[in-house]
Image (cartoon, rainbow, N blue to C red; front, side, top):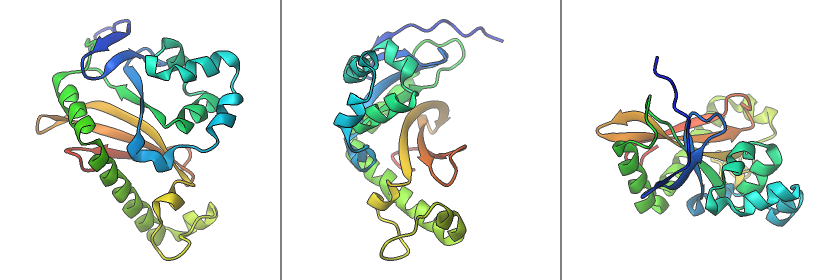
Length: 205
């Protein structure tokens, strides 16, 4: 079994600065997602103000990709402060022995960036469709968490953002038709333990 190499920050021409994740097994960067603004948390000033000074400094420096931020980014208060800035993780799953993204991951990520507004619209549309469909099938689940559409059977995106939270994306090592798939994570109130995972391929979730 190949030994996992020790990870170090690298500068990548497409991803920018990549730093080791919390486990040291993968790489990540922090990125703002304007196309998913309904999932940015409110009260950014308050959330930043509640952080201890060292953590606040790292959060404000997210665009520099400080290694220290990767070590604390899953702390509840730090995660909330980042999400209030619209900043989420982009994880890079690495093949055994690799120390950088493969060509398919790079090409897929470049395509995401080039068409980000359209792709995020696709993501939001399918999320609305899925959650609304799930409620029709399992209404008791949503009644248990106090959620039902305000005006009809279909949730709006703003309603969904009250109980579904974006949790970043991962460039996987799974390839389909020469492109990597992208895993999109969601925290959901009806399944806090497992959450919800989307798979994005060729701009479609």
